[in-house]
Structure formats: C-alpha cells, structure tokens
Length: 71
Image (cartoon, rainbow, N blue to C red; front, side, top):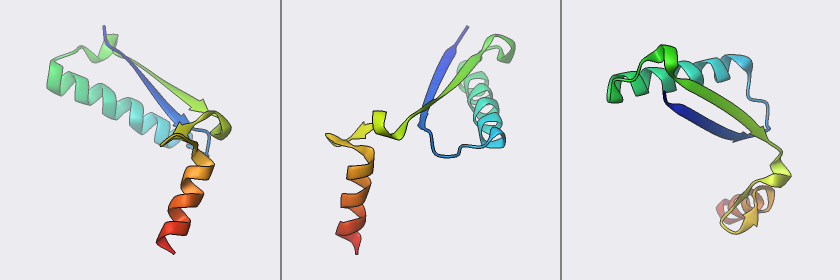
C-alpha cells in the first residue's frame, strides 16, 4: 500500500496537472514495483511560497539571485 506525498509551491498548479501527476506516479509504482494501483495513495500538497526554501534561502530570493546571475 504505497503512499506518495508530492509537495509543490502554490503557484497555479491546475487540476489537470494534479490529475496527471496522480496517474503518472500510480502508473510508475505499478510498472516498477508491481504495486496495485487500487491501493496506491498519492497526495499533493501545495505549500505557500514563503514557506519553501532552497539553497539556504527563501525560494523567491533564490530565484531572484538565479535570474540576476543569468542576465
């Protein structure tokens, strides 16, 4: 009974995209590990941008630095 938790920043992920993620992860677990799709749970959590960090920085600061470095 696999349980997969996908966390993404809250930036307009559509219902269609979420459905594709759920289907894709379920299919992958079935194909790779032989898990029963009927007992595979996929949960998608949207995290507020201010609650997400990368590289030791809030994600918005990190992204701004990356943009500045490429321009």
